[in-house]
Length: 325
Ligand code: A3P
Image 1: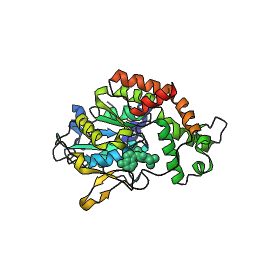
Image 2 (image 1 turned 180 degrees about the vertical axis):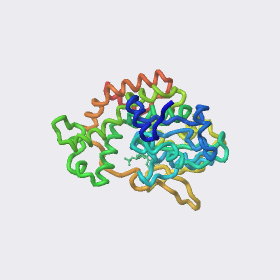
Image 3 (image 1 turned 90 degrees about the horizontal axis):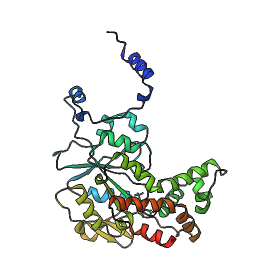
Image 4 (image 1 turned 60 degrees about the horizontal axis):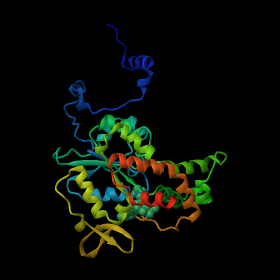
């Protein structure tokens, strides 16, 4: 039996099996062989029970904030790399390995009743994520929030303007969404970032390839915005988390913010920062009509998919397809 020093051995191995160069992390405790060589100092319990996968601009920060008020639910700590979200499954952080990921979570005091989670809103539409997430967290529950993809695209455009993105400042929303293959590369990049996450049914099908329908909750983002107490009730039921937390006490509508916020003592509130719930002009009817047409096929597919899954239809989807027909 021959062997080589570790680095040369690895080089030889990956030369023979090039497909295995991309790692796919699994839970070490799900395989006895892995568990046996996993350090006694380590635990497999510092992993999330559920993921909030976005997409961006649908209310994912509000859901994260509301979930974090629940006594049995704990969010991952903030990432110094991305300033907020962990974004483990979606990019190069994945190569940092699962110890890096687990460090974002506390050791739960009670594994069966504590619910750890993380929210990374780009998970929804990043192609590599469902496969990677399912390899490490096969039993996790997955929560997604959907709003009208036209509004999502517009919110992203406004977000980029607020961040002084020169492309968003130099082009109107209509120019961004109607850009074609001969448009400048930077305009096409913004065009894609506005439109691509909104192909909801294609992204959902990818998730459903790796997760059972019963593991997936689709939240209507409009409802989250207008009736968060009811939404948080259904989220708690879906997760099976106890004790039941009464959000009627915890949340209140803040007139000046125009959104639901955390209720504090003495009539004070804690709302999300000014980057959430921005004030901007309504989308033009031209852009609304363009996007309604653009997303028609995907929205029809989404309708079919939700019916197949027995999931309720979001009000915006019903309205959009009704207005388009
Ligand atoms: P706008 O700023 O365009 O209005 P995300 O956190 O996924 O990036 O989503 C941001 C969006 O969440 C905001 O988009 C806002 O409309 C929506 N939202 C829903 N509930 C909210 C709340 N309670 N406070 C602030 N924003 C909320």
